Length: 142
Image 1: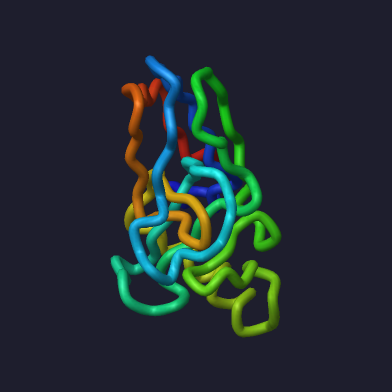
Image 2: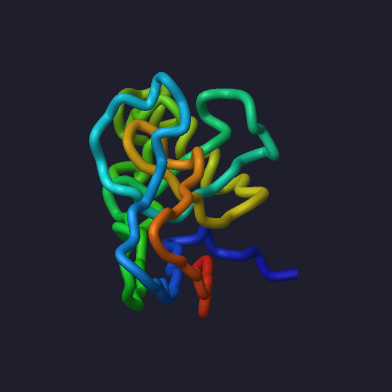
């Protein structure tokens, strides 16, 4: 069996359709005190590890601010384009770089998360209208 090459990027295409004069809500927790717009961004999980600092990684700064429209995001699987659950980029220090390299070679889940403020993946809702998210393509590129 031929050896697969290490993945090089994640590409995702989608459309956000809205009605009304929307407000995107994301400050559901008392600790979410940051002012940053609601976004959707690629996410990866390594080793099926939902609890450690180095199990979960988010595309950062590449994200899509939630508004009506269509886009394609391509995020290289490089240490400067992803941050962990504590907001440290994959090139923060030697330990984080090693953990990031381990994560991209042991990805068990990939997807998208929605969030805003301090949290990339704690969810969003809308008021004063509706929003629909249509995923059209998701690819882990070799």
